[in-house]
Image 1 (spheres, rainbow, N blue to C red):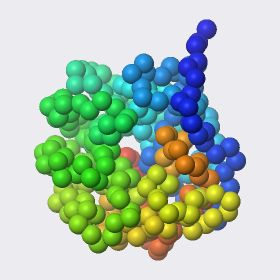
Image 2 (tube, rainbow, N blue to C red; image 1 turned 120 degrees about the vertical axis):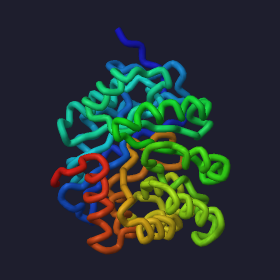
Image 3 (cartoon, rainbow, N blue to C red; image 1 turned 45 degrees about the horizontal axis):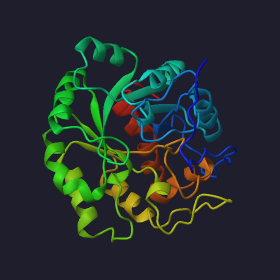
Length: 306
């Protein structure tokens, strides 16, 4: 019989009844950043995890996507599962060819294991540089992983704080794969969008083979308002940053729900209202289609139609 660990104190569960978005997602929309947690009884969490979440499995994710109008998904390995990708792979497998995966792997992974992940639908690995979530890995180990996955045509997903970019960008630029940055590199949205911090990030994107997720305004916002209680113009302080990225890198931007929104401490957003955030940053139908359909299809399903 499985033993369930108690959740992290203060953990916020995902929104139980998201609204139907006012913004209608285009046919073929891809949620390029979502997760599954367990369920713990079937897929135990990693002993070294820094948090214990609620259960948020593949069936709940599929139900959310059906409600929002999402056609395909990229399931990103959650840190609570460490390098055991079983739950993520199960969710990808259940969706057939409508899902891809981003894994967490160790430097000693074999080529045969990588080929098996590739056959299962994995198309990238994630390097997490947030010290509160994972123990930082030596750059030599990460470079070794990058060399192993490059022949598969995979990319590397990077999660870091904007304040750490100056010390990391040289290492990032040396990696032999395309790069995908989570949540716009977590900018400080109290600083000017044209200021040195975000300008440095934009310069990094322009100088390298980088894709950017204009995701998680609920995680970046300081002044809100929150995507709750019918608010369809949420997180206005984040909008200029997302809009700037979409305008400058329209063919290299991605969007994702970040469901089930791990480690939020202030509020849990209504996922339907988060969809209504999209046209605030991608303001034309062309921008919206590239962000939601064309770009993720070219990265995760190259050569396929919608």
